[in-house]
Image 1 (cartoon, helix red, strand yellow):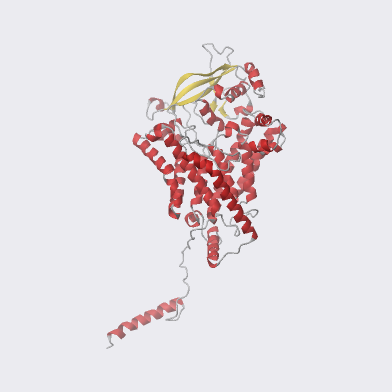
Image 2 (cartoon, rainbow, N blue to C red):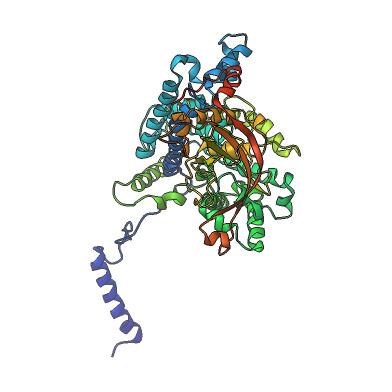
Length: 568
């Protein structure tokens, strides 16, 4: 019989020998480096932004691509040689303001590449700028590779269009894209085209530039609301917003029918996300990631509930800077040779290096990034003062390059929706009681009561959006409406390409065109109008502009230097 201690030691010793045999080590030998079990995935370390840069640049390239696509499809009709507001005439007015010279003052007041091009073929110039932007943005979107040269080219190309776009490019998201694009230039290496340029890690200054941008966007939007329309303070704005927003989509129809308490919750949530959540950026990594997630989700909700161009898609872009590689790595596949695997190896190499070698190019880049930070800080002074002012203005720029701007959205909410409906007739007598007037249909704005609201975001129909603004005022405030009427009287093919339905297609142009003013409301689901297939109910307010003939507009066009439409 063995003593108790020896009896217990024997099986333990045997067990140790079996374990050692399984590991290939002698009993009692020091443990070696652990081996990864099958299926184990190494985790990316927090604090690096290699993958973040790829996502951010691709997201920015996507928005650029959409913006240039809209420009290519619509610029000729809006600001081309025979556009509704020709940019050639606009540039001539700018030139005349500076005594007819094209010097530094002229160019700096309206920075655009068009000053360097031949104005005799403005349509070709506009197409060239848009196509070049489409090509560059498509390359970055597909490959995930970009350098400062390509990003600067995109910025200069789009700025050249925005600064001659007049009211068609007067929306806040144009300046927001230019500011976002300007920061994107400094996120990249100068020449290298690589998704992971080892010698050019993403600059913390640039990343904080993006965070500062999303902070100002959201806080500016929140402050303009609580300082503006009273309905934001009494929580009733969402009772009207879905119905009266510029271009509703199908989901807006159903969201409008929500109970009152849902609309109150939506308004409160909006205030929380725009007035409280932005400060999460400054409360450490986890709260910054939470900010990025909440703001991205908020923008997705806005995308679902309305057609706000590429605004919400663009607002997601600076939010990406809130995520580091550890937080955003789930978007990338794992495996040997994958981007995630390469970043993991780079992180390990960086951890082993006591101090990275500081080369001349690194010093130049750090100096450039520091200069960028100082520039953004200096240009932010009037923007911050505007945020703090009780007379805050939104969507304004304090410099022609639009590097740092003010932002805001829906500071006031309209309670009723009004629409301008353009109509034409072939009757020789516009005032006869039996005159038949036929409606023109736009691509997206409400018109035909039975037409389902469109779903086009992130694409943008600029004319439809401006027709929403025109309905708030008279045609004297929007002379381009009369220009459009003149083109309809001539069956102008370019202008008609902006519309969805021409009732005079394949026949003689109308003899008269008029504008009618209507009040529109959503039909009630289950109600009589909805049962008849109508999404909308409308009631006539009165005439918007009187019946017009083409020959009556000759002097009007000549006085504004507009090309007189020729009958098609």
